[in-house]
Length: 144
Image (cartoon, rainbow, N blue to C red):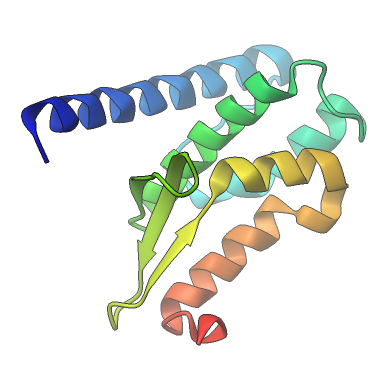
């Protein structure tokens, strides 16, 4: 990685963290819910989406997906030890999770958030998180 690439990567990670922090602030102001970078907060995201938008997609879906995605991904870095990785193939940032045996799984967090808004509870973020957590404990056996 060149110095330019390393600097850009670091700046992008700082921007993701800033947007995650902004999401926490916005949720507190809009819904009176205090989010943190912890597992309990992940379980609140589906309720925030359900009650905040009543099953409809936000008018500014792209911005909402970006903020929810930055926040959800940051929580995964804290709770599951995930790492943000840029994927040229996906033209965006993914979360990379590594199981104890070295098996790697990548989660397209922003795509998942968009699906949650589009498809409703069938694409539950809580369930998705639980499957990732379970996957890490059983070395992503479902991928093999």
